[in-house]
Length: 303
Ligand code: CP
Ligand code: NVA
Image (cartoon, rainbow, N blue to C red; front, top):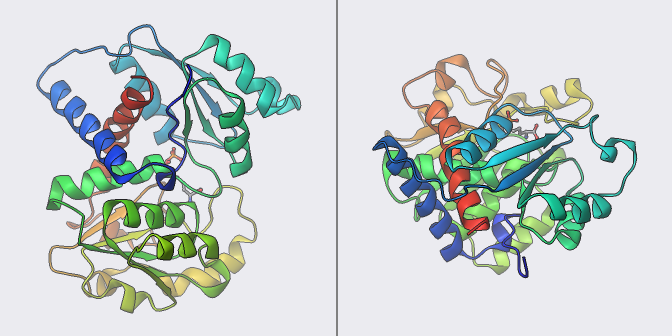
């Protein structure tokens, strides 16, 4: 493939392309609900490299490929030569001769760059320590299905300034919503991402007051206090406790505000059971939409 269409991060694609991918995902979702059986990826294979655990990403990509007529090959941490030190570059060159696209979930975002540089086929970011763009596509799809366009709305992010927070910043700029981040100082989002948002004219602010972030928000989002690979869970719990989303905080948001969480969740930690299992939570639709949004990504990458 001469110019592979990679899905690496939301800041790497323009707003129009991201909207086209979401529309594609929405069309495929509707077509399937109406009993359609289109197989645009007939005969195509996706390799999935997992250097970290996964439930949703793994299952939704595999089911998505099968529904589109394709196949997957899964390379776990211990069953490929990557685990024994074969380079990402060599792996990219070899996989490019066998499959049509590669999805990778890994720790170091540099591995994604290396894969992109050496693969002749599309590369999809299935999460790194830096970002989680596939999840954001599902989140935007979910918000818009429930409440209409997200452009002009206000989203509150409370908790760790982690990979999800970075992708929320990218999404705020590309989809045109305001983002209010509330994070402990030691777990703030990377300064270069905030600087990028400012250069792009995004309405993104970061503070330490979760109540202020949630006030009048249209959507409240949080994530685990201890991401995969994080150390010192006890210290993180202490720092993040003041950012928990509970019913009082949820009540500060607009009357029709929604709650989202990428999952897996820890009830009683980043969010109370009352909120995550309550009427404003749309987490199951959000999880389902991983499938539909990623079918849009796959169809776009491989078209
Ligand atoms: N939200 C998400 O990416 O879930 P998994 O870690 O289960 O893939
Ligand atoms: N921030 C979390 C997201 C899991 C989908 C992690 O990286 O573990």
